[in-house]
Image 1: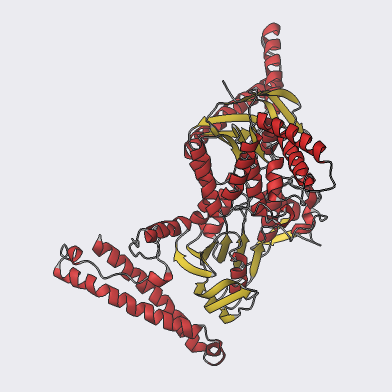
Image 2: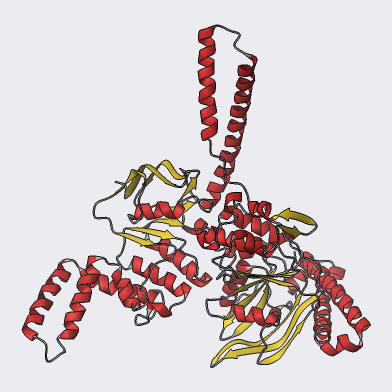
Length: 638
């Protein structure tokens, strides 16, 4: 027996139908991922399934007695409640009974109160609560609060965005739901919390319908993919990767069928213009068929277009972007950055990962010279032009129009050597011309992210700082943004909890190690995670050339001496070369470090400009030599 069904559902806002006679069935044990482009109506559909949103037509049926937990994208909480009160409030009528019971319990402590009346009321409440098994739910609430690392006595108004998301999940899980409905559950959660949530949802066996654009989360959790596309629900059993393969084939078939239909319609339009030549009855039938073809073509909904993004890196920065030497920064008693050193060059694509509150934004501000360290030195390179993407969208004025946000005081924007009208440019980011003068306050979360990207890319910058750019963006736009950043010739700093996005974009990672300690690694998130797993097992991965998959932290970058057993398989000359490689690499790395220290000295640029150029050139040569030696070592060991 299904948990719920959606029958012939229709829903429209304005003239665009979000649901067009859609049908859906959910069976026990399924974990269904609901995906689709921004603005297609996924959240509205999930709200309708939860019973908190309505439909224009059609019906939602739920199995009688089904316990449903629902977490909307922006959960509403009263700021004056404690965490425990907020979690218990999700229990419906039971929450009111529990609140009355605790109020009576506190009132009994008052010597002036009517003790007999209060005791009678408490016994009545206690009997009703026991009949509804409320005490087990209260114990469950305490367990999930502990599981989500929340303070039961903290006020909701004092919580961060990530803590409020965990609170909403705790509230939904406290009722031990048969069915869990989650709208963007990974937003505002750090990577550790996302991975814990993945494991919990899979291990619990709870039936689940969820909306997410996190591809790694989709692949791990979903047992079926349902896409909301042009008002219809398209179901694909299996994983997200299986859905992608099937979807590509479906789009190919759709394009072929549409082309055939359009060709046939064009032939019929030519015929009607030539006049009626055959018998009258046959011609009337053909005319009626043509009219039907015209209606079908007018009713066809084309797929939403792709975002067209272009990025101008402007004037090239100097080869050195920033050099930090033993930098530390504290706020009160909390040390956010402790004795951190790094050297970042033009073209580096750096991912910054760490739990919420670890100080990722503080670290970036130190690197870019916006914040002075308590200890250590920061040397900035030349010709650095920085552009920011702010996860809180604080740079968007709610009362401004879209045109004013993109190009205040001008009707044109310039991207590289191309000049575009601002309305055409907004169209590249899927904003219709009639919306160009709409206020920012009318936009959804995904539309605001697209607008902020459009604003960011409308100005040249050779250093990009992207703080959680993936929130609320649909999968297709995420993939396009990935491609753009991969080809970007400038320097990129990326803060994100989207593991797939990090892996596909960055070349190196700066990760929080706890207690203000940060360390630089080669590769993306998965490379860092593999290294951490190997380190826990006392098994350091083999050194590589900084390639993806060959992760090496800066302080264990020197390779170990090759084993004699390996050398025995080589010729005498190759074995000797292999034995000498570690010393040659170590010597180059020592020279590299010494040059880096000299280049970090501002005095060098004031008095010896030519010497600085020579050292920079030598540094480039060392990089190439190290790459060659490490590749040679890998070949000899293979």
